[in-house]
Image (cartoon, rainbow over all chains, first blue to last red):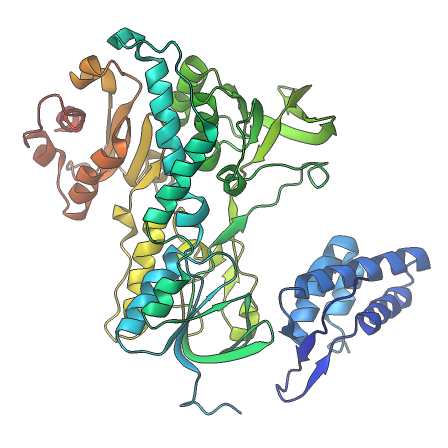
Length: 95
Length: 458
């Protein structure tokens, strides 16, 4: 994970802002990957690549929304692991 | 919560190229508080690194090439040579003279507030540019297009040229492999070949210029092979590229056979993709891989947002189309009586020699639409001008309705980019082949061939 300027995320409500943490993002992807029983080595690799991709995407966009992060991450995850991408995209919407 | 009557600007235009420029200037002139955002160089691609610089380079290379072949006219070319830095200097001066190159000052002087950065929608009326956040009552998206990525193995490890970087070269190239036989690929192929570079051009399609009618690609392919010594590799897939010392190795598959060749440079000219990655979802603007979805008046799915230029998924991309769309969008943003863009009379030009110009319906379009049509194709050699110019590579092709009304035209000729406007006018005013056939055309003009083609259908 590369070091870059802090990223500001606009939440859905539009009222609260928080700084984006690549470390927390990486941990959340890894957690979902492991929950899907993806082997740890592969899970770690997917989490790293996705975090790097999101960080690269936000380099020229220091202010984005939570929906943007989810969209960009999902798009990248679809190239790496379809099931994980589906889980990540629909997190919070599944019964 | 945003106060609806309190925005930073009345209009924010995202993109200062052909699609955004006219609208931004018109809006400011009309008294609306206007902002213009640009993430790259102000002025967009046309004056900075595509149309204008390419046209200047092609002019220089064409002059050199014609002088080399002047023996039959009594012109001796022994000792003829070119100076590459001078050619690039001419290109730079030409771009600067347009006044559109890197022209941020022009907008500021016109009362447009400019920002340099990547715009990103946070909500329907708000964008971010870096750490700044701006709001506007209306938006015009004119972000253009970016080069399409290819999946050629090894490309990420080998430096290569793009149509943009070709206009910034510091030295001539000895040999080049061009991937992509579309407009940019063929123009650059001829540019380099005219200056003495060994050129190979490959496309997965069965002909060059696969989006144009069959005769166009076939003729250009023949001219490239016969006159310029360009190796044309159609039905070819480039498999891998790699470094080989100071050279580059290209491996391609053609006719079931894999071959490898060593060249100085590789050019990737596989087209462009609309630049839609700016948080359009947050603004509720619909889009797909062909571009932003707009109505005939260029309004997007968000009523206060319009789009113009290459980012719009309508018609082949060109600066001419983008300028027209910018004019129409600029009007429609602030007027109740909406205008529509008339795409049928926008000419499309490919700056090879001979030039390829098309307007209106192509035969392929007519076939796909199951339209009853008539066609006439007359070769250039049928006109007396081809004798005095000693040039016969070309033709005029007309597509008409059953009653002779002109629906479309393709011209391949030395001055096709000028000739085509006669047919644009004919299409706009619903003229027929009878009208063109009975119109006096100046003797020994290239346009005479239009009259001959019209006579064939009359």
